[in-house]
Amino acid sequence: MLERLQKILSQAGVASRRESEGIIAAGRVAVNGTVVTELGTKADPDTDTITLDGKPITIEEKRVYILLYKPVGYMTTMKDPEGRPIVSDLLNGVKERVYPIGRLDYNTEGLLLLTNDGALANSLMHPSHEVDKGYLVRVSGQVSPLQIKKLSEGVKLEDGMTAPAKVLPVSESENNSWISITIHEGRYRQVRRMCEAVGLNVVRLKRARYDFLEIGDMKPGEYRHLAPEEVTRLNRKMAPVGTGRGPRKTGVVARRGSTGTGRRTR
Ligand code: URA
Image (cartoon, rainbow, N blue to C red; front, side, top):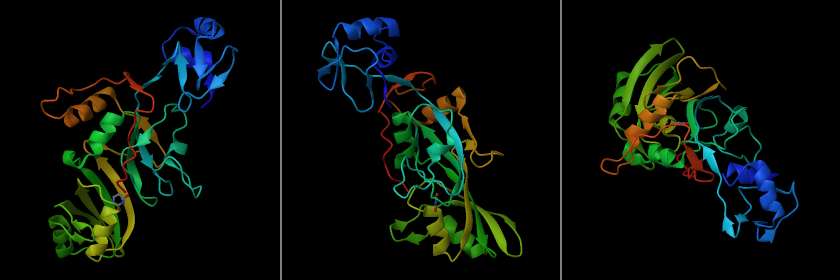
């Protein structure tokens, strides 16, 4: 986003906005190699190289952690070439650039975490951390004990066997049944493909839980910021033993552009 240079300098902690004006006027600031002295000149700190006395400046950004109820009909990407709605459209009021932690299909609803904390996002998505994801699945007709057993033990998909899952019947009516499936893998359309593999037709899929975080009675499109204790708890779980990467506090800063959450899980 284009911003006035004096604002960018003050956000980078160089000086106050007023003092930054003096610094600019003195010819100490360059944008993409060209010295700028005119006050009010704009630049984009994400794409332009801004230097002070020849050294690049970096902007620090507050870390934010958001739990969104992703509705059906939204893409979990930051852009959609087909122009479909994207999850960030729902985050009015969040000015930081946040990225989804993992993906939910266009037709899947439920709990989606978003953050600009690339280190935590990458940890949570790393298969070695085996974060439990709990889904509620509505399928056509009835579910047999054999289907539950097969889903629980692991089913053969094109990309290999699925790991054992926790699968429980939830409710049943004449035309539909709800089951809950908890997996720790994050393969492309995994729950849908598991159900198909045992002959179940998924009519609704909702992620209700991500590790200890639950969607509860939130409504589609609603979001909330995680409480500091929740962030601490996630960090504590993710801290690899012996690395000294202990729990962190919210409100600390992340370097803009440090979120490396481009990994495609779905
Ligand atoms: N499994 C799926 O099939 N889809 C999702 O969106 C999430 C898990």
